[in-house]
Amino acid sequence: MTSLDQLQAAMSGADVEALWVSNPANVRAITGFSSGADGKVLVTAQGATLYTDARYTVQAREESRVPQHIARPPETYQDAAGRVRGQRVGFEAEHLTVAGLEALQDHWDVTLVPTRGLVEGVRLIKSPQEVQAVRDAQALADRVFAEVRPMLRAGVRELDVALALETGLRRGGAEVGFDVIVASGPRGAMPHGVASERVIEDGDLVTIDFGARLRGYHSDMTRTVAVGTPSGEMRRVYNAVLEAEEAAVAAIRPGAKAGELDALARGILERHGLAEYFAHSLGHGVGLNIHEGPSLRKGSEDVLEPGMVVTVEPGVYLPDVGGVRIEDLVLVTEDGHEVLSHTPKERL
Ligand SMILES: CSCC[C@H](N)C(=O)N1CCC[C@H]1C(=O)O
Image (cartoon, rainbow, N blue to C red; front, side, top):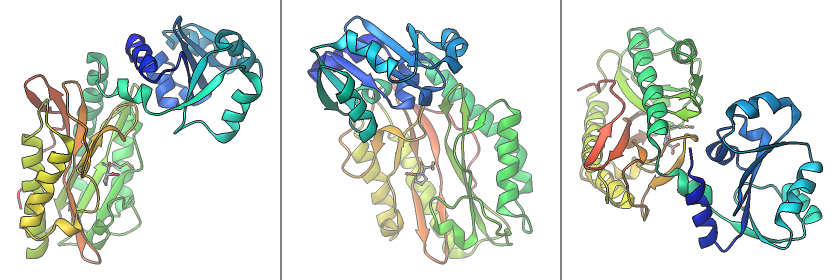
């Protein structure tokens, strides 16, 4: 759903006449072809061509918004060579492998120019259809969380909670967006504590971070829930994280500077003496990739615009003790924001 016109304008700004796109999500963004990992795109002033192989003839015809050329290397490169001879051709420096670059050098009579973030820049602002896909993915995740919430009790393995979430997402027609994080008790100190065999205990806080992928688009949400009564220390941590999260969400609007949102959340945790345990950024954009721009991190100069979809997910991680993270998925609107994740947050 990426606008080709916008991409061609970005290419001009980067002083390239053509662009060789190898990043799977970028291939999908330009063409709609869902097997982006088995495709490449050549964008020129005339338009875009999807290159993929004969396993995808029918699928590419059904899905792609741009003309397709079915071939395998080296024929792929030979066909593209004729379209770009003598030009300045950009390649995606952050994604093309060394072998991939060598293949271009071997087959093309062009000036190859490393580029960064051209397609990603266009992907920052979601179209209405893209927003709908993220919205639908999150609505499914909210429904699945509500179904699974009653099983969060002492005696249940983290793995079984993850399996129930995964099954719910799959039954709902989605893929599992990323490895489900279920981090209970002391494991909560691991921001990426994917579900383990640990058995949840009475008094644990359990951090659950999961998302659906629907029509290629992700959702992302974290809730930390109490099983029984957690310690006073962990309840204080929970309430501090909740305060930081709610304040940062409330500050989301067009023109907000991503670095300042991070600083706002970090400042609240600082007041609670917890900033040193906030071990990651405040959030990130979400779309075809679970992590994409804009970046809501310390020092980020990204500025929010309507149509961006971002997470707000402060966390505090106390080694050997436990952790808390609370995350909402938020759409930046013309006059502020809309929270897309509707799962209630516990008050401890
Ligand atoms: C591996 S995908 C993780 C999704 C999660 N919501 C997330 O983005 N984070 C959890 C810890 C911080 C943040 C991250 O930067 O990975």
